[in-house]
Length: 448
Image (cartoon, rainbow, N blue to C red):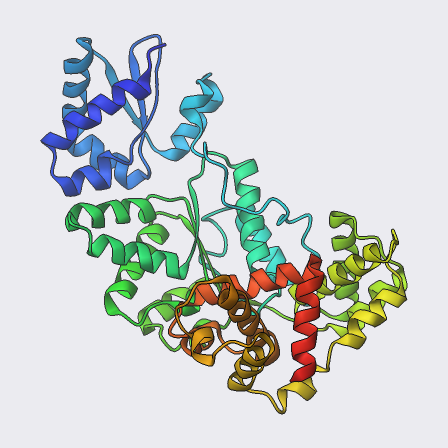
C-alpha cells in the first residue's frame, strides 16, 4: 500500500496554489486522507456532507489532476462523508495510522467518567441527558445546556461525555474549550498578520467538528464580533447535526452579556441544572472518593464530613483529603473521628466570617500575616514572596465570599478569570496534602 499521508501533503501544496485561500481553508485543508487501496482507489474523507458536496462539485478535477502530476498514475478519487467512512472501515481493513482521528491524548480527565459520577436526586435528570447525548451525539438534546453552582459536577459531566465518545466513537472529532479560549482564538485570528487566512483556519478548526463542548459560557465577551462568530459557528454545527454541549453557572436568561439571538439558540435544546447534593448523595460521593483515591476512613467520619459540607462537591472531597492526610501524619492507616474533629474545629464558621469580612479585609489580613504591601499583592510582581500570598488571598475571597471570578480578577489588577481560577484551584489542591498551607490558611481565617 502506498503512503497516502506523504502523497496527500504534496497534493495539498499544489492545491493551495490553485484554489482561493477561502475555499482551501474551508473545504480542502480539512480533508482527511484515508488510504490508497490495491486497485488504485484514493479514499478521502470530508468533514461533513456539505463539505463532501462542495468538493465533488468544485474541486474533484483539481484533486485528480494533482495526484496525476505527483505520481504519474491515474487514480480513482472517492470522497466519503464521516458516516460513509464508518461503513467503509467496517468493510475494509485500513492501516490504523491512517484511520485514527484522535492520535493525540484526549483532553479529558481519565477519572471523570460516567461510572465515577455519583447519581442522586439532585443530578439524576442531567446525568441521564448527558448519557443520552454521549450515546447519540447530534440526535437527542441538541444543544444540551447544563448549569449550576461551583463544584457541583458540570465539568465532570463534560469530561465524562468526552471520555465516552473517545472510547466508543473514536472516529468523531471532538473539541472541549472554555469560553475564554474560544474568544482568545478568535481575537488572535483577527490580529494575525495574515488575517483572512487566520480567520479561515479558526473557522475550519471550530466548524469542522462532530462535537463541540464549551465550558463557562457565562464569560462570553460583550463584543458583537465575538458573539456573532460564535452564533455562526453554533448554526453551522447545528445545521449539520453536530452535537453542542454548553456549561454555565447560570441559565441563559440570566447571562447579562448574552445577545438575545444566542439566548434563543441555547434555549432551543434541553436546559437543565445541577443542584446541591442531598445528604445521601454526599455520603455516596465520599465513599466513591475513598475507593478511587484509597482514602481509608471510618463510616462515622464519612457521615460527619457529609453533614458539615453541604453545597460544594469540590470542598466536600477536599475535606476528606485533609482528614486522611492528617491521619497519615498521625501514623494511622484509617482516618478516625479524632482527625475529623480536629480539621473542622480549626476552621471558623463561614457564616460568622461572612458577616464581618470583605475582600479588602481579607487582602489586608493576608498582607499583615506575610508582612508584604497591599499594592504588591494586587499588582504585577511575580516573585515567590508575593505570588503565594496572592494565591491564598484569591482562594480565601473565593471560598469565604463566593464572588464571581471576574469580580475577583478586577480586585487583583484586572487579571482574567482563568488566572483567578488557577490560583484558587492551586491552593485547593495544596490544602489536600500540604500541612504548611493548611496551617497558614487556618491561621488567617482565625485572624479574620
